[in-house]
Every structure is written in structure tokens, then in C-alpha cells.
Image 1 (cartoon, rainbow, N blue to C red):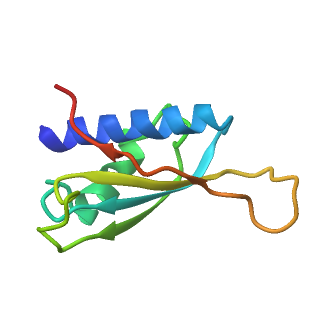
Image 2 (cartoon, helix red, strand yellow):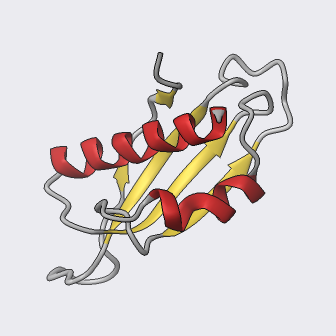
Length: 108
């Protein structure tokens, strides 16, 4: 299924970004979903917990911003906007977010 491939690619990207920033566990993932991406917020939410099993994002929350703009140049994509590392956070205030904006596209 096309959605399954997109979810696998998305989880791979989350792991790649987390590894690059030395994040061991992810508390929250923020996504932007294009109007023509073939993924809906409902689909993402329904499949997120299963798709992330065994990854750094297992058990993470998911925030989804859905675009209705079919003319946006990213309308066919899904953009990883940020990751929030899971505590323990040793600093003051809230833990920092890791910002990332490359689109996730299906594997060929």
C-alpha cells in the first residue's frame, strides 16, 4: 500500500534526524502534510503507533498540520517539521526541538 511506504520512509527520516542530533528517544513529531500527498491526518494517526514500533519514535505523540493548498510546490509531500526529544532533559525549561524540513517521498 502506498501509505505504508510513505510511513516507512517517514519513520526512517525521523530516525536519521534523531541520530544526527544524538536524540535517543522522541517525545513528539510534527509534520506538515500536503494536499496531494495521499496521506490524511486520520491515516497518519491511525497507523503511527504501529509504524513506529521498535524505532526511536515508538510511543511518540504526533502533531499534523494538513494543507489544503493544491498549488503549494510541496503539495505532494510530507514535511518533517520538528522532533521533540524525550526527557530526561537536564536544562531549564522545555527540551529543545530538532527542526528539519526535507520532504519525505516514497521509496522506489
